[in-house]
Image 1: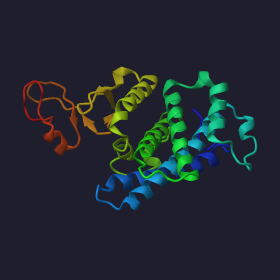
Image 2: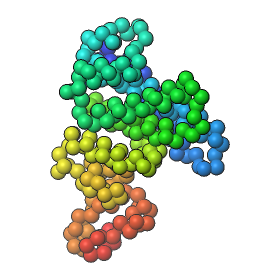
Image 3: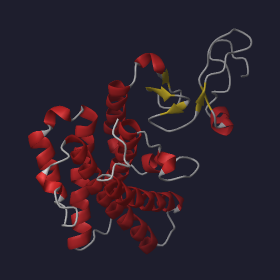
Length: 258
């Protein structure tokens, strides 16, 4: 596994991490804003979330390209302006397609959409409604965090340290019509990295996506207590209020309280 402290990578990672942290701050603010909030405040956080994710994605792609091709001509002069995102993506697809897992191909497709939204904000009149732009950025943001975790062993809380995790905020900002596409992406990513035997079924979203006590789709903590009456292994959200509300705090086999 390549480390991000390699001398030619560390400056790229430092810039990328800073923008990921900035994006996370704005996603968190967006999730705290209610429907009665000042529209200008919502637009402010939406705009900077999208721009920050686009900037982080730019450097993520450069890091990935550096890993695959350390002497790539596109990145030869670190003092010069870097290539536009579209050119980096084209180079990756034209020269390294075999090295791209399906999950990473999906992230790159989402990055393309984020870059389009970023260009609208930066170079045209900013759209009045940025809901779709934020949704795309939230998905890309999650994809970037996931890639850094799986490919470079960098946990998301080392980038944006908050509780609940920043992935929770990003998931809630993905528009509902895209949830199934997002779930499909997560399932593809899990299949590439983990044996199904290491995964459990989430009682909340119904997917085989619970890894080490946390759902990789809805980001809820999940415990697996054994019923003291019948011995059934149960799947229960760590949030006791949520478990009680959904009646998941009782054994599905015998009805005993867990």
